[in-house]
Length: 178
Image (tube, rainbow, N blue to C red; front, side):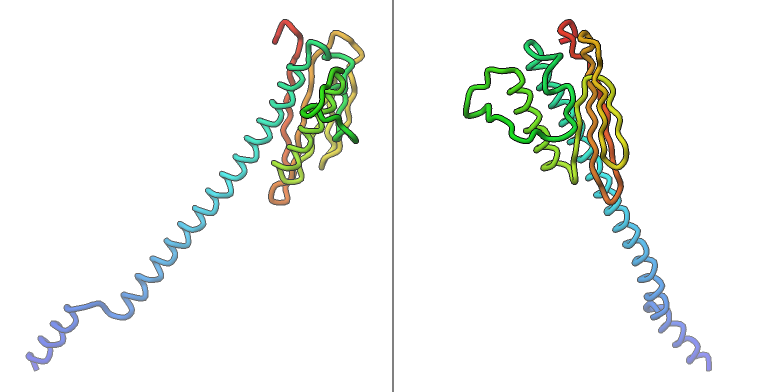
């Protein structure tokens, strides 16, 4: 009888039972599922950050275009109230655009095209004065009556994972601030 008990103990001490293996696999599976969820969250947040960065770069892009054309055209140009892309912009790359309004129309057309290309459902508006955004993406510009007011507002909206996102910037483009 003692020999039988000794043999059972030595057999049990040599390996793992099926139950121990199954519990280990369940614990490992939950850990891997948590790791996969963490990676997916990281990818999603990285993409959100990328889109936010693109929106900031595009907002500064149009402000820089306005600054570049500001010597000729800060007040009274096409930049003042642009809530949608111009209908038929001139091509200032292949032909000469002598009129500052042509440059403004060209810049706005390229900017609106870049918004649509780089942001999902991207839209934007530029306004010299007060810019109001009504969700999801309706813009209203109240142009400043003062000819000395050179403060421009830029708003960009896009849709990301069925959520409306928005970026608002403003900048004073007076020549003494350039």
